[in-house]
Amino acid sequence: MLKSDNGLIRNRISLLLRELKDDSVVEYLFEAIKGPKNSKNRSTMVYALETLDCRGHFLDLIELALASRLDVQCAALNILEEQRFLVTYNELNVAINIFDKAKKNNNACDVSAHERVANIIGIYNETL
Image (cartoon, rainbow, N blue to C red; front, top):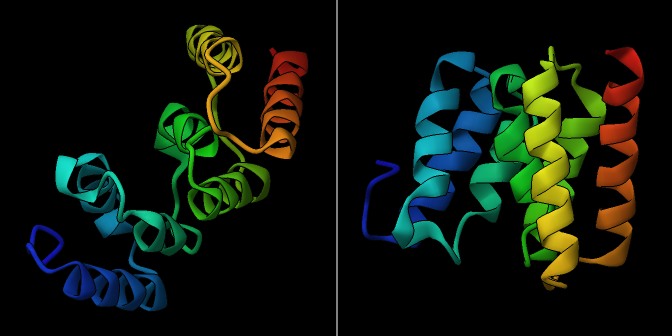
């Protein structure tokens, strides 16, 4: 259903998955979020992830937190701030590179999202 061409169906399924709180669907949601047909229609899917265990997707969430859509940013930032991730040194370096590239490219990311991502990266940097 997440592969449906109908965005309304994908949104309804995403909301249902959020309500079910079944962590086994996390990979399917990330796959759909990354899909080209959802590049402008993924906020509900990211929102659905807020009730699920996303610990294996730190870097994906960093990228989403720096996305151009405010609703996608907010949902990704909520997950990054609420859940605890086991971040490796390499993942932290990749996150820093993603952040630096987004800042350098002056993407459409909200300024407060940049600050929140910098804070999140800083917290994990202190724990390594």
